[in-house]
Image 1 (tube, rainbow, N blue to C red):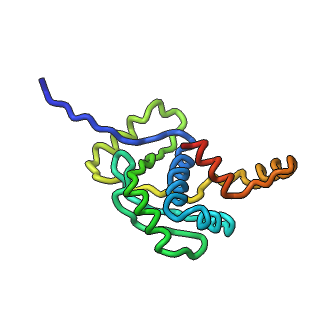
Image 2 (image 1 turned 135 degrees about the vertical axis):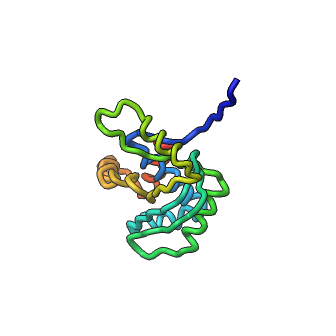
Length: 161
């Protein structure tokens, strides 16, 4: 009987894939730098994009670089990356499914055929998670409630994780 090699790859064609990844990253921000720092980032509308290499399961192998719309400390990013590695977080490898594509055979074939040890992805904080914040805040305000950006982010993280 021939021996078989089974492999697993964490690929997603889900339209919310990037939101899942942003939720994972945002949760790591909360765990590694705390509520006060995350609140400050949100209140100052700071957007961060990290570029990382992940293995086939989506675990961080290497941090490449970070881009942000405003200056942030390198120490902050280092804490988040350390948290991602130490807690063994798994990101999804996101692909857009083209119309008419019946399965993801072409995607997985390319990933497996190249014998790559890692896959390059980017993940955003807070990404699209805050896209409906102003709308939701107005609804709650009409009900006499005050919805902070941090509370809204936590709701969105909970939705996707």
